[in-house]
Image (tube, rainbow, N blue to C red; front, side, top):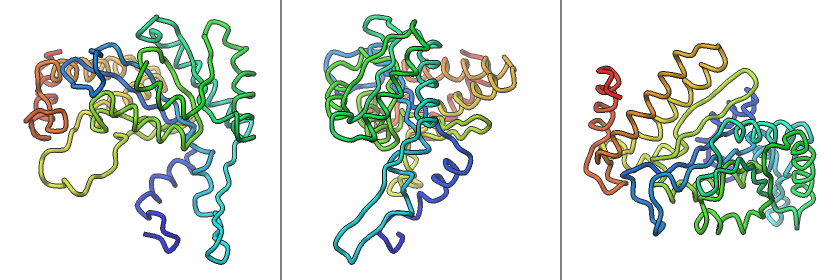
Length: 286
């Protein structure tokens, strides 16, 4: 813990994000067959969207530069730039174009999540988003305030296709979203920029269960698939994209056949799941 009370463990990850300009944090949210959800009446395929979190600006960019005045007043600054908003908005529309649309109606849709009714910085985020949207007339657009969005992700998750938001809001909402599709163990993450990419499961290190063999490896496995997809597109190598697709098919098969970790109400250990996925990939059983 730093003297100011913030966690030192985040230093490395945040330094990578900011120094490598990994501005787009792509967090897929998908309910797989065989995975229990706390939401009633939902099944595999009903939840399948992306939360796109702006990763280089927003409130988190103030880390290390905030002020505590005489032990009485603390201040952090939320910064959003036109260039930062434009590029994350364009990324959102590109992801929507590549998708099959929202599960409920098949509409390719980008939802801008903000708090534009209260803060000028979020009103600016929304206005720049709307400007960018004019370049994508084939993609439906809408706005949602972040407090309402927290409810919508529970009551109508099938409506969403791509949700784009400021850094902190995306961080919070993606954890809520993960809970609807099995928990943080089912949450892959890709952090990408113009030249670099960083891929890891969205959850933390969970030292309380270290060495127990009960951690859910699916989020990490799906993050590896995202990495191969990104590399395939970056280098024009279709073999990498095919490998990513194989990983996802094998993951789907393992989950559908009941190979579940304890957080998914199953009994399989971390090593058992990982070994099964690797064996199926090696044997070509996908």
